[in-house]
Image (cartoon, rainbow, N blue to C red; front, side, top):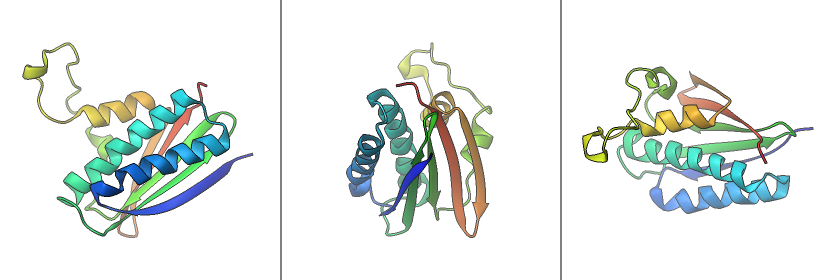
Amino acid sequence: MTTGAAYVFSARMTQLPDVISFVEAFCNRQGVGRRDQLRLTLILEELFTNTVEHGHGGDCDAPVRVELSASIAEVALLYEDEAPPFDLLLHRFDNPPDLEAALDRRPDGGLGIYLVEQLAATARYSHEDGRNRLWVALRRED
């Protein structure tokens, strides 16, 4: 059996605590363990921040829809925004980050895509009806 919840946020960084609270409440209701909750929260923080900062160029009232579902085996996320089309999954292999390099020698950016790729069991993107849509599934470890 799969259970889910969805919520629409404004693309404003002041909404990030509400996004995190939404994830926490969902995970608590569904018995999702702390480790899985933290992985999901990290992915959502990255996606939401990128939507606001890069997709919209700053705070705005554009909607960001977050839909979560849980089954015994996985926790799934559908993330939708109305920023210009951007498939982050296409960029994941362009220039993998050198995690061994000193911090001052690493370029800015790129770690978020890498992070999503490392934490997700599966990820799929499409641009439909003027929205970026990203499906991410995490295998439950807790």
